[in-house]
Image 1 (tube, rainbow, N blue to C red):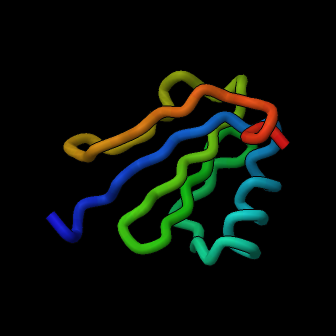
Image 2 (tube, one colour):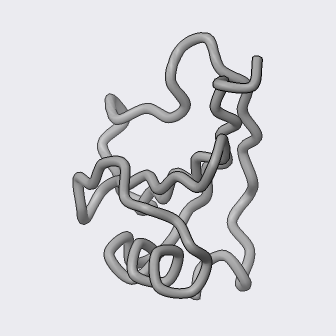
Length: 79
């Protein structure tokens, strides 16, 4: 299981700003980006998925067969 990704999905107002923050300040790398709707960043086995409030419903996170945690948006997550 060490190669398994753990996924965290969160809602943000601006996907591009979220990607910039997590790569510049938290050491994540971009795995994929479909801005302005969705992007995911990875650091080790942690995958952070940023989703815009009006993202397409067919853009899904996490991938099949992985563990995930979905957080409700809060003012802290929506900066």
